[in-house]
Length: 548
Image 1: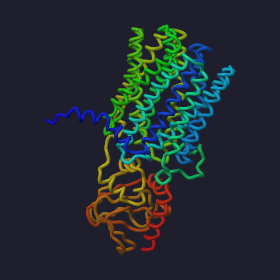
Image 2: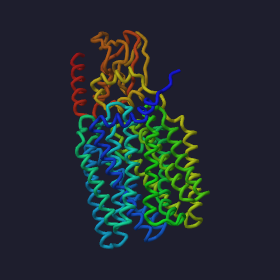
Image 3: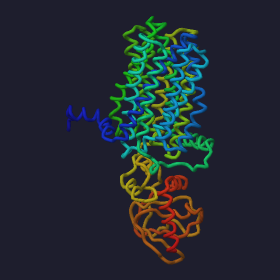
Image 4: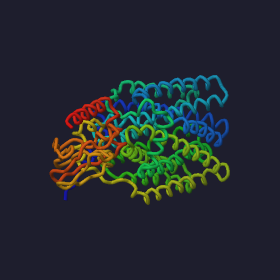
């Protein structure tokens, strides 16, 4: 029996940070996450206090609804825009715009402008958050060198975000104790400016991104993202669990204001401190999630996250003291971060790269709806039955959602593709250019084909619906009754797909062979998503047609 040493445990806990810190592009992406998350957290405290002064818990719920519902409509279309630009450029544009918006909010707050104008800026800022989130989430798979780095980067991003969400509200609380709300908005602007600067220094992803045709209408891209979620059981499960979490997150946006001011009798700076506790818990959760990097199954972690998010809130309702509040909201932050790390990693593994931004756009739209629903229902329960009843309802709902997630864990794909399959795809010029996560997903979703010696794979004149990558064995290419070539690597059956015609040759196994069958749409997206791949495909087709 091998016993892990303490040093090995320390390395395992910090390996995601080592994996990210040694790559400059991922370090810059982390800085962008930090600036954006800090700006959001600081601005949210200022907006929440303005709303609470105007209308109490209902005012906070109105703020959330005004922020989130426009985002639910706009986010998918902003995701379509992210498809049309390089993803790193899109992030720069969005975060620079958020600097302008939050400075405008500072100006209006200083001038004592009508609350409606401030809420309008809050809505625009939240739509910007959704857009920047889509851009960075869709950008991550293009910057990593190995699929395990996707979860590693998600761990680091979540820790950075949670840390920023802890420091940001704490800074907002300190500023509120000594200065005006406009100064808090100014601090948020600095965070967004840092995010835009970090994104501006990222390398170009033009050569590794799969992009839809420029002629694709945003509605078509949105529809494709919705179909991708509906057709994939794994994506549906992740989306459903995220929906439950977002209802809880919306509820907490009301509770972090109501609990300190009404239930605990704290000063207004208590809103910032309690919000910071959620962020501190998130940092702890992110560190605890470091061991997820190499884990194949992520749904159980999502269910655990929901449990940790909900149960402490219900427990706090039974003993509403400051000490229990500190523990409950910190543990809820742990659960929230575990949920995000596992969920975003699962989406990144599941969605096709040309649809990834659209899938994240759908996620952001549903996030806005869930967030709003949670805030509105929680405010209503507070008004009707009090804060303690709201805590019990929210905690019970999240625990029930965790149970449903655990019962549905079988919908998660658990089979890792064999290394030989990934190696064969990577060696194929038409597909091998794909980023590591996309290549692994193709290998995991392709259908293995065992072809005994002498059997026919495709027959001349038949319609073509799949291309085949050779993993092992030798194939003969026949036209008429004549063998014109032998091959033991690469792709076959691609001409019918690329030229939209019937099979131009018969392919027969010379030896027992193993292949990967790739469906038409998957194959055409891969070979058409990059200029170099398109040129390689055209050259290969011309070469093979010339030999017939």
